[in-house]
Length: 376
Image (cartoon, rainbow, N blue to C red; front, side):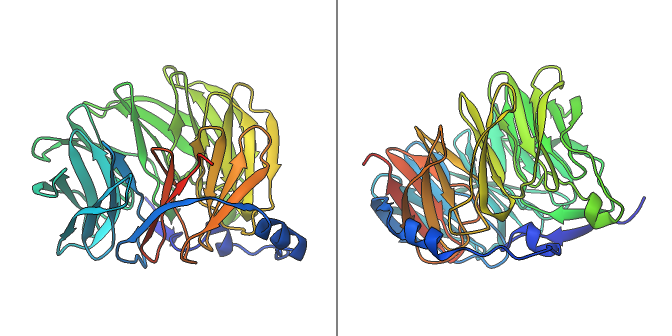
């Protein structure tokens, strides 16, 4: 078997790793239009430590917003006021988080350690897996699911962290070192992998239910053929959808693993869905909407002032997008019109905004945590 080599995507968009025929500039007219937009009202702001290598996601549970940083900081904020309820300054080097579920707050480390805390910040247990954890561990139905950078997915007992099962997906010789996570739904775990594959496995024993192709490798060189799924899938009651870099966006039937539709797309950031559309943060700063049932293109928005976007968030009638300059933009869901905009601390927002009551929150790589109001 060839040795596994990875390309690091954190802190920059993966598309920067490839030579483009031309650089795409942000024109002055576009910037002036953005500056004239209405401001999204700020609800509150607070902070946690900066993150240089790892990329963290906010997690919400019972009106508590959790954030983590590389230096082992784990904070619980009041999601309504932004007040720090507690700040656990651990001695660990966190690399993946935050995940919540079953009354636990979960983070992973560069050393492959999984730490579970209760909602008061007290340590519950520690588990060891095989390599770095770059995405938030997930908990559901007394199981904790953890993904590692070497392509393995572990099922752990939520009581004590003991290992119940492990799944190893096939990996090509060259992959992207990404923070792609998993989604748990209906007693199954769904995950996308390097090489454009997506799999469904049992939450309770790891047995494979089905494997489907989101995108096929194309080209001659290893770089050209790289079509990794570097973000988490999205799911509803009937279908699960994923997008690959240098590849396609596809929706698969949950029960049979049969492809419903697929369209040309390329994203290292991720996607979101509502009852009508699939929204994808594509390369070069484009947000695209596809009809959820047929995959037909609905709209594209490319005038957001940045070529490196976060994954989208569906927030009522809006789509929320962060970017690498620390701005958040509010798009109208049915036509992609940019309605409002706000700035944070000027550093990149690399993960999807998180829904909170009345709005959303983001975490920047400099450690800023900002909450905004969408009821205006």
